[in-house]
Image 1 (cartoon, rainbow, N blue to C red):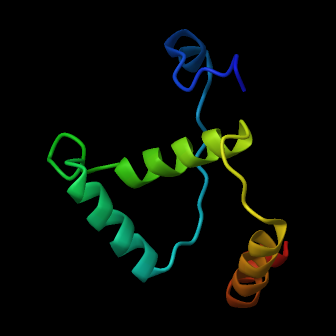
Image 2 (cartoon, rainbow, N blue to C red):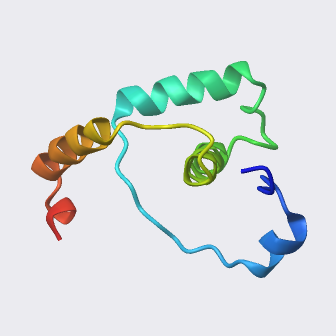
Length: 90
């Protein structure tokens, strides 16, 4: 991870983003919104899209090996969402 750049403006300008839909339960969404508000990211300038930006940051950090999520937690979450959402079974 020593050569990993979290924010590479030149590289990011070459990437295109795709719309990707995920389901998040209301309790988690509200707790995330509260934490973002505590960080000062709930202003008119930042309000829209801050949760999506947070998800992108977390996925980028995780995929770069910055933190570990046990496989069992991912499997449990997938099992839960698969039983709640028909699209998870596709």
